[in-house]
Length: 123
Image (cartoon, rainbow, N blue to C red):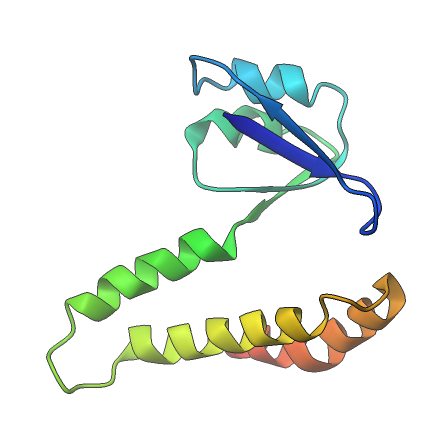
């Protein structure tokens, strides 16, 4: 299932497109002519689209976070490691976004610059 979302926050449009393939032809067809940010997981099917001029591919925090949870599981018991520290910072970002859920775009942008950017610099 290929899922796209777009539109203003108060009227989002969500498109579900079923395909039997995870090949790059599918997102290339669905997003033909698209320019802007593209938030995806690490599926190789997005590589060609992400390499196009005018498309900036961004990673998904949920997928990044999952890798650190996996790393945390192999840490020695009772030890705090880099995975713990990184998960702490990612959770701070999640908290900031939770607090911004109902605010307007301008306030969200200002708050992200003030609150999220320092956390991202730490990461």
